[in-house]
Amino acid sequence: MLALRPNCEACDRDLPPESGAARICTFECTFCADCVDGPLGGVCPNCGGNLVVRPIRPAALLLKYPASTERVFKPRS
Image (cartoon, rainbow, N blue to C red):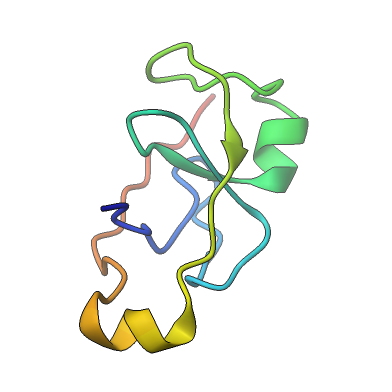
């Protein structure tokens, strides 16, 4: 099950579970659309994989399977 991480690893922007701006790779590295379309160029800086739109977990299932609260922040230079 996806962790639904709460923020962009590059800029620390909040990405709530319902955010359409969240992008992930196959390792669930999480970034915002602005970072993916801009400095990251569509490539995960951690694994080199592509980044795609993170699926939205239905609100009713968020109660049973809540999103992660663990923030990962790795500023890029």
